[in-house]
Length: 614
Image 1: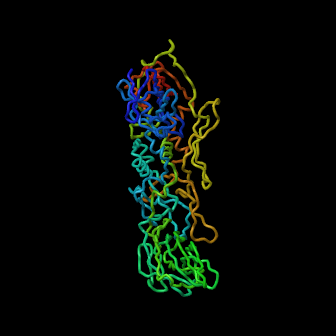
Image 2: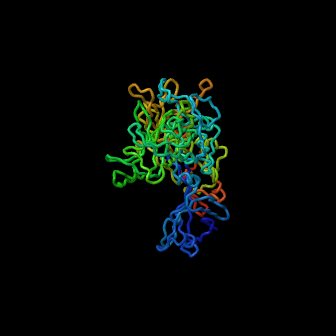
Image 3: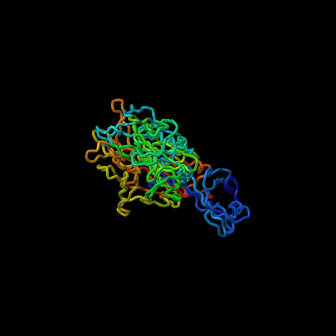
C-alpha cells in the first residue's frame, strides 16, 4: 500500500503507522440549511525534520509564523491513484506528532466565498447600472436589469417616486461565478422554472456616491458688504460648469452656484486664514446658504479651526475643513459667506482663497426633473451573504450541492438520484456480509438533524401579512418535535390585484412624496403581463415548493431506513464515486442513496446507505 500526501506541492513524510481515513459525506440528505464538506479524519504526521520544515517550525514558541492560521493546498495519492486532487489542509496542533486536518468537496470549492464572507453588494463592481425610467420593461426582455410591475405603495400623485429596478437571479449567479472562478451546473428544468425567471427587486436608492474624479477647484475672494446678515461674503471669480452644477454671475457680488441635478450633495474642503475687524464678540464660520422665502437657509457650515486676537479689535481666523452640504434640489442656487465675523482686513497682501468642491448624488432618482436616472446595481443589491444566496437557490429548487469537479458545483435533487437507477452501482457482490442471513450489518430508522416537523420558512418581516411557510414531516415520535430546517434570507411577499406587493413607501398626513420604509429583501418571479414584465410571488409559497420539488424527498424521509455495510471499493472506484448515482444491493432487492463512505487503506469501506423505496 503506497500512500503519498502533498501539502502546498511538497510531499510530506508519512510514518508506517500513519493512518489516513477518508470520510466522504453526501450533501443530499444532510441538514437542509447547510452545505457540508467531504472530509478526512485528522492525520498524524511524524515529527521528521522535513515535516517540521514544511510547517515552518510552528512547533517552536520562538518561531513566528502564520502557517497554522492559513489554509494550504493538499493532494492525496494512494497506489498511484489521485484520490483527492484539491483539498484544504490546516495545522491543528503539534505534540509528539504533527496533527493535520484536511477538508475537500463542497467547502473546498466554495472556500473563496466562505472565507471572504462577502455579501451580494460586495461583488466586483464594473460600473453596472441601468437608467431608471418611468416605464415597465418588456417581459423577458434580455436585459439583466429591468423594471418589473409591482405594488411598492407609491401613490398616483407622487411624482418623485417610481417602481424600483430589479435584477435577474441569473445575472447575480454569473457575477458570483466570475468573482470566485466557480461554475454552477443546473438541470434544464431548474433553469427554465427558476434561474431564468427569478428576480430580486432592489429596495434601496444608493446613488453614485462620492467620486474623486468629480473634484475641482474654485478661486474666490473676500468681499465686505452686508448680505442676509453676513458681513463678509465670497465672490466666485471664474465661470465653471459640469454636469452637476454651474457658477453663475462669476466675478460679481451676486455670484453663486446653480444646482443642475436633483439630490446633489457637494463635498467642500478648504484651508485659509485672514484678518477681520469686529467690535462685538465673534465666532467665525464658513457657510454655504440658499435663499428661501427671502431668508438665508444654511446648507453647510464649518467653524474656524483657530481664532487669534491681535488687539485693536482685529482677529485672525484659520480654517481647515472637509465636509459636505445637505442634499440640494435641481435649480437651487447657493452662495458662500462667513458668519459671525466683522469686515475683512487685508493685512496679508492677498484677498483671495480657493475652495475644492466635489459634487455627487448619494441617492438614485428616477429619470426626469433634473435626474439622469442613473441607478447603480451592485450597491443596491441586498445585504445577503453570497453563500446564503446560493443556498437559497438550492432550497427553493429542491436541489442539493454536489461537487462536479474542482471548479464546478452541481445542483441535484432526489429525483435525479432515482432517475439514475439505470446507472446504479451494483454492490451486490462487494458487500462483506457479517451474517449468514441476508441482513445488513446495521439498520436504523432515523436521519441526523431531523425532527418530526421540519419548518421551511421565509425571513420574518412585519410588513408581510400572509403565511407562506410549510414543513417536511418525519413519522417518528421518539425524536425532537420541531425544528427550523430552512430559513431563507428573503422575506415572502403578499400579492395585491395580481402583482407582488411590497410596502416600500409610506405617507403621513397630506404628504405628496412618500418616504421609504425598511423591508426585508425579496425574491420574486417575473410573469408575462400582455408583453410587459410583472412581478409575482405565485409559485414561491413553501407549500407549492414542497409539492413540486420535495415530493420524493418527503416520501423517503417520512419513514427512513438506513443501513450500514462494509463494502469492497477499489481506489479507482473511490476516486470516481458519484453520490448522485444510487447503489443496488441484490440481496435486498433495493436501491439506496449514498449517505457516507468511510474509507481506510484496507480496501474495505464502511458505507451508510438510505433506502430509496419506502
